View 1 (cartoon, helix red, strand yellow):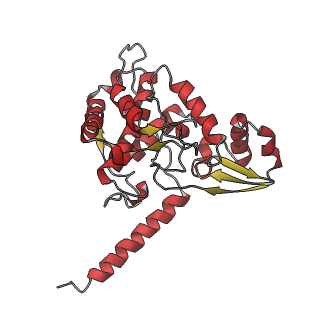
View 2: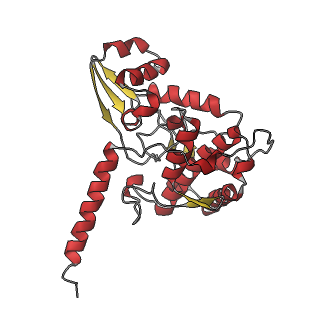
View 3: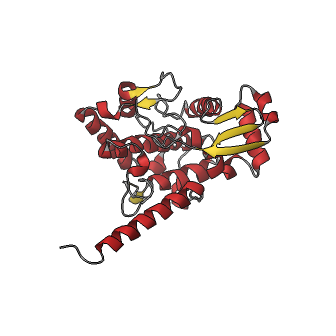
Length: 274
């Protein structure tokens, strides 16, 4: 027998979920550093192995899709490779992060974020969008749920991005390095990050995204920009003019920027599958 308030409860949950979806669609989490994660050792020579993540990328990521959007074949991932990915994430959690140099930490966190995102999607696959993966503590996608523990600290995907990567490095190219498993997101890069290649990969990722139509598409005086430049505008400049200046730095046909008189934002949340 249904409880008399059951239908009302369902309606309330639906309204809360809708409200969360709306609010997070127009406002991204603030960037705020947690001092605990500032500790590092520049004298350290420790190198973190990301070979397992590279093997996963080599097997399942199509980095030559004609759309220019890299696709991850979630449906094809074998049970043994799911275990490989899980073991990799477990190994990252066991590392004494504070004993690494800052460059090693950057590669560690970017790879961690991307691998963890793939792991979360695989656990719930098939899904049409990562936003449909919801928990009680995370009604708008999986980003607010504590998924891992590093140095005995519980962490969510949002913690990694907005309390570690963004505030510590203060490099807007971070947005082109981390991937949220969506068509509208900058590409999941086909190389694991390392202390040696992070700068090169982030620079290439920024150029790739800004010169692809999902980054910015210009039609005469009107432009359609990725919502990333709206959600995280503070990372790219103090005002719209400075954000456009940032885009201009990477845009190949840079003269087009000067024709823009108005623009809008959009983002495609469809899963980045084949």
